[in-house]
Amino acid sequence: MVDQAQGLRDLFLSQREKQKGAKEPAGKPRHHRVISFTSGKGGVGKTNLVTSFAQMAVQKRHRVLVMDADLGLGNIDVLLGLRPKRTLQDVLNGQAEIRDVLLEGPGGVTFLPGGSGIAELTALETAQKLALVDAINELAVEFDTLLVDTGAGISPNVLYFNQAATEVVTVVTPEPTSIADAYGMIKVLHQRGRKGPVYVLVNMARNGFEAVHVFQRLSLAAERFLGAELINLGWLPRDPRLESAVRQQTAFVGMYPQSKLASRLREMSTRLFSLRSGTGGEEGLARFWSDLVDQETSDLMESGPT
Image (cartoon, rainbow, N blue to C red; front, side, top):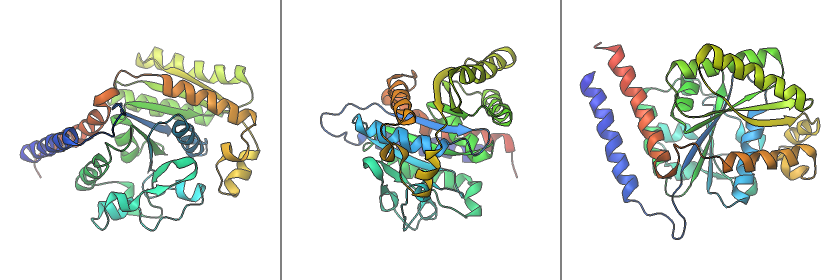
């Protein structure tokens, strides 16, 4: 297993050299950020938020790639009415190049569909994870921001992407079950040694007072029991018209640009993309790939000989 682990490190180093040798688009400085959006439970509006933030980032001239990392149950393409001919499964199986899978979505955002109803994708094997690293690494010079829409819960895939991202946005609603599950996610990430910033976004709140109460509950618990500091990204109101946008497979900010929710989304997007984690910059994607391989190396070392 030690030899295999060293092989993973060697593979990463070779990928790193390829990335260094690639040319950046003229006149655009390299500043990579990998931001994962996660939640303890489903139904908190996470995927809608990812697509909205991505569109607003493109408007600010960021080069954005959205990865649907809810592998096996991906639904971004369905949400936006996109019809992919191929998905990430084809890339991992060696049946397609990653550029053949990319989709152009609303607002000029590029999407990498994850595939739905594919049981084997719900727990990636080591070889598949490394294939994914290699595939997305090819796109490093084309995008400065990777937004990762993870699945809900604490499955191995979810933890895998959250651990490696430069920043994590935890989406929570005022429901007690959502708060408890969000804390569970934060706790597991902390126990696994996550060092990057963790933001909290309170969604579907009735007002600011309720949102502050939710954040304080999470923040105080994280500080008291984990010694961890959370960053308050802000809150968003519930808007029943969001369901209409989902049924029509249209981005909410495009359908209702003058709504209070759309206005708050723009404010929060500005805040998110103005923050600097201290782990982005030129090393953002390099760290992402390195941490993904580190996790595989650690798992192989712990598993011992078979």
